[in-house]
Image 1 (cartoon, rainbow, N blue to C red):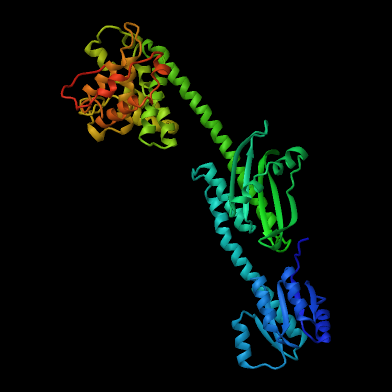
Image 2 (image 1 turned 90 degrees about the vertical axis):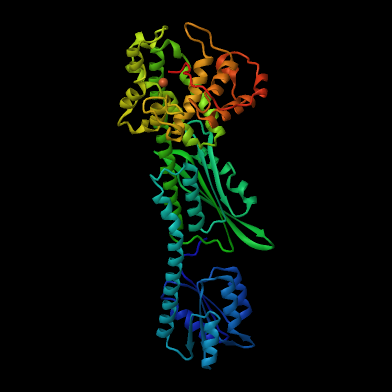
Length: 509
Ligand SMILES: [Fe+2]
């Protein structure tokens, strides 16, 4: 069982000195054992937790320095006080250099002995607190990471790293479950030794809470042999609870020579588990909000499409085409999430265009065209001030800009046009040519590709055209799924895209 009182060991070949010291310390809050045989004392040091050793310098044939060295080797923060009846300055300097904390000259008053022990233990406490404070830097990092937008896995990994440091564990893990189904949704670990991964990820550690509904941590210890040395392996499992529901477990594996969990360590684990619970709860809420947000955007996109007979399914297809290009450009996931929103909302401004213009099969009059080309600016006005929709701005504002500066609404050119707008222009036009319209069938792939090449460098960013055609060649665009028809791709192999020499307008508006 854990020994929380300071463990004091007295070593002296004089029986009466051992007796006097043990008796005088009996009123203090220590566990004291004494040995007259230094070999037995060293054996005890190797097998038990020790906080302070009081040893004679000359113990028969033995030297107290051997006890000092054995203590330092086995317990790096134990305090050693040496006693001698024959002090010399050289001896004092020598033992202090070897790591002794103090040096008592016999005969000494018992009050002086008690004071030396108290000083030694308080010095030890300061040292231990310092170590704990250093490790709490990690702990604070976890707290400070709240609200910083770091990914949930990374945040939970920080909790694991703090658990490992605070409890001196060699392996830690988090297993998160979906509370209703019990399905595992996340498994993370931090292990010094890869062979311990399966020990801390063992699913029976979770089952002990799902079956018993216990909310208290479970601590199990067993004697094991590691590299030929006997050790005690302590496995601690702490349930992660959110509003009294089990959401998972944090497991820790602590291997030590002694079955000793220091005061406060379980409290620290409990605090860190609460942090993990908050991270998981926040993530669930965030995902709920994201889901509702995406549903609202989809509803908006559907409302736009419902008014425009030409664009049934257009938004979804354009999103899918744009995602394929963005992935080829190496965009990260969060940027692709923004792209989805941008693609869905890029024509939201068409809400402000009357049906008679939106669905007119004939050529638009100048006035009608003016109304039609106002839709990017109308779109910007609609989403103005809605923070959640900010990522859609470059898509809405720039999808009708042209690479040569002859587009609208601002007439930007080349790299002045946000890449989001340049990318969407390629996907938007490609889909407009391939998809069916009320007054005509969708054109074959070759027509769309020829159009992209013809306007490469004038209407479209030439690099993006090349990337897109490369994706078509590589079969990365599923035309059958998008347009319900198989296309002959063989003509793509003969293509040698050249910059366009002529400017003409494509179908997309
Ligand atoms: Fe548009």
